[in-house]
Length: 291
View 1 (cartoon, rainbow, N blue to C red):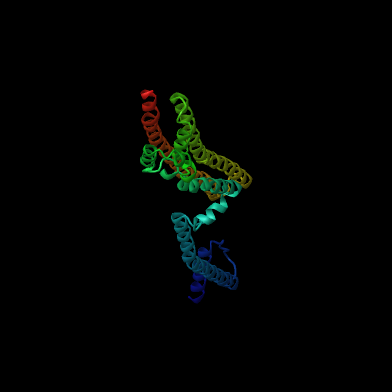
View 2: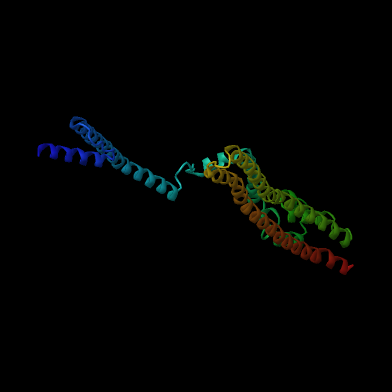
């Protein structure tokens, strides 16, 4: 009975391990084989348990890493450099941005000059024509001749010329007065002209800087290979667009101020021509009519 039980246990162990059954073999080898199978099964179970435990510990770390990458991709902070202010952005513009800034400083000098010199008192001061009429009626021609020195303005110089040549034909005096007015107005137009030059060159310099930056960026991406980091391309494009934005930011106010100064010069010119025409008509035309 005992021997039958032993053979049954040995047969069951061999069937479990998938091994062959040797009929007529002695009992001790069968028992030994079953014990070895159970030991091997126990070792494999422990190894599988350790692998599961390791995967369990690694899974949270992988989850955190994946979440970090997704968050970085969503917020744009994964290997992307963001500048904190315009100072750093201008540095990224390179030499082209320096040229743009230098050109804007050059044009700013003409802006301040126009704000200071393009005023009514330097072309046609208010009340000067009425004062000149009073001096003409009083016969104080000496004071009228010196009016161009005491009143350094375009109208004052015209009145002085009329007083000095009051006995000359009106057509000749009128023609020369028109030349004086045209020359002064042309000078004011020319002093505002650099603002138009800056407004024209700034966008072109910005476009040049963008093209140079894009060339450098694509060369960098090409060297990185087909699987290069796409953020290199995005960062390079951002840096290349700095000069374009800077050029437009400078050109817009310069162009607007150029037209403002041009319009003011035209207005003062019309007012000046009106005053000179009235004085010539009152002084010389009536004089020739009396003759």
